[in-house]
Length: 122
Image 1 (spheres, rainbow, N blue to C red):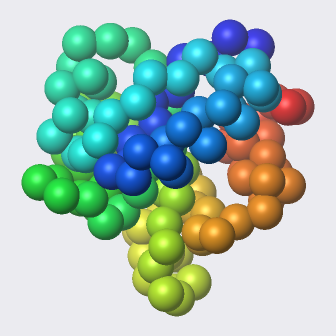
Image 2 (cartoon, one colour; image 1 turned 90 degrees about the vertical axis):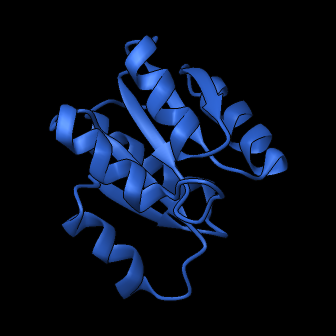
């Protein structure tokens, strides 16, 4: 597969666990700790998709998503959030996300979202 993904979360343990799973699915994974760092990496490198948390210091995922959409309307973005309600997570779709996953999530749910958004089998 070889798709290059930017994984954005301020919790190092979450980054590590999700990165390991995405790499096991065959993705090349680059990480960032907040929206500002993510935007800098998106300007410097080409990515096939973004997995991003909502609540982060300096710049959260919603603000970063809005900035991403100003320059790239097509890059797939999956929001991974601990938002307390499905409605709040669904609001990210209105902001330009392709899909969302609520933390804590089952790996099968993330896998299904990846297959839907990237139109691949993992």
